[in-house]
Image (cartoon, rainbow over all chains, first blue to last red):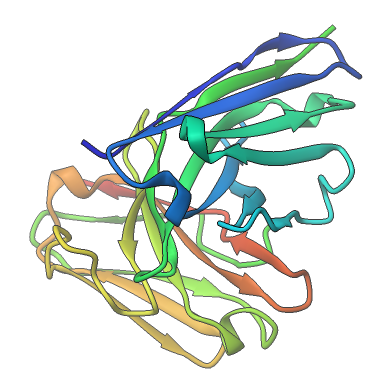
Amino acid sequence: EVQLVESGGGLVPPGGSLRLSCAASGFTFSRYDMHWVRQGIGQGLEWISGIGTAGDTYYPGSVKGRFTISREDDKNSLYLQVDSLRAEDTAVYYCARRFQTYDAFDIWGQGTMVTVTS
Amino acid sequence: QSVLTQPTSASGTPGQRVTLSCSGSSSNIGSNYVYWYQQLPGTAPKLLMYRNHQRPSGVPDRFSGSKSGTSASLAISGLRSEDEADYYCATWDDSLSAVVFGGGTKLTVL
């Protein structure tokens, strides 16, 4: 079964850091671009980073410099290092696979919750 | 404030046809494909439509997509109770160099 499972979320104070992980299974991880999308409570979806198969990375301006996406293909794992966290970073963080044929996010994890609070 | 504009809510009765809209600009919808995602309550988003009007395998043909200029639409015919969900449009924005989503439309089946 094709699956993505996120972990690493939790409570963190403002200014703190977290490393989110996404474990992939059921497909050849190294062949796919991977992304992170977040969703504030009761809010819409926000794309926050992407990484290509060659390790090229992409970020929107809102998180550039604070978030770092990376991957370890031999471990079928995707990561997101989130630093200098702010209250507005409180959200569910999803990892998603980009399927080249569709040019879209076709597989999503169940999400991991990050709460920034003092 | 989302780059793509979607109505906050929509509703319909079983069997009805409803159309959800998504409005953007020349730097996003006007020059790129549009995608639609369905998010059932308490679950992760699911890809519903890609490249404006293509359905992934497993998506019923009750769902159809279209794009004209800087706007896109998702139509759902033969509305069913299980279609009650949030629907998000998405595309690439050339000016922002970012994937952008609409704010989402909450569809209620009355």
